[in-house]
Image (tube, rainbow, N blue to C red; front, side, top):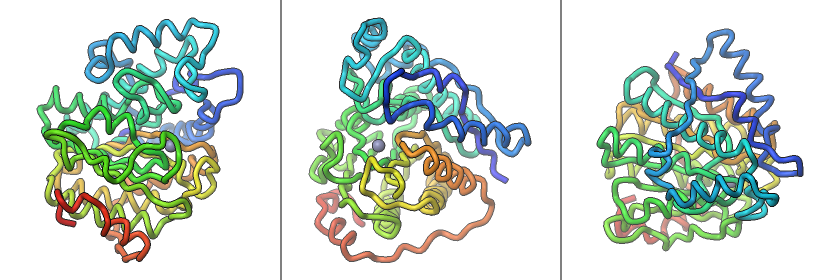
Length: 342
Ligand SMILES: [Zn+2]
């Protein structure tokens, strides 16, 4: 079995608010119980998270923003950024721990202590920009991890794949001008944060290194497998990433009412097999998953477990990629062909 390092910790339950919120500790409570049993049976290896230092947070986020978060945490109104993103007393240390857990997994992969990593922390991160929390996100965990890999390990080609139902606006904004991090986001049109059009393709040296695939509501397994399968085939062969990071959002599951996307539980295993093959071909298997959304706790738990099993499985075939006409048209009309041969 592969050595899979997981970050999960009861302290990730501490970011909470008394009122209703879709992004709440109940998302992960049952999943954590399941993982704890696996850990007790030594079926998985646990990597201890640490709080990211201020210097590490400042790799991506401004000091002004971090100070603002500290101030908001003690204010009477916890929704200082938007109606989704609450900040309470425990939020800042929990967010630091979520970011630091991802860095710890990246370190373990680079040291060869584990083959793959998966951070099951919250709050999620991919909507957070350098200077603003939004959409349940405070620190952009995946952007911090990519930046950490650039600065501490000198990596110059990092691929981020984001299959959360929502656009990775924060991650995109942070790396919009660089070709050292390629951000590929597939997401449902018309959802928060209402960005991520196909023509948002990067700027300056980063032109062609932001790839957005906005898709229709009601797209499901076959469309997603075709689009991501085809794109990754071309992009990985030409970009030759040195590390693959995955913003693993599970809110495109058919049972998650936040989106109209119809992904099923087994699809999360399918995409994991595809990503594993690419990681094997291009970057000595360096593959790190970071959990983003997923607001139906039962669907999230099943889908995360499907992902974990797919990361642990020894033998599997690369999934077949069948053409789906309505998805093919999206790829055909996409401006990415100026930059990539797909
Ligand atoms: Zn989402």
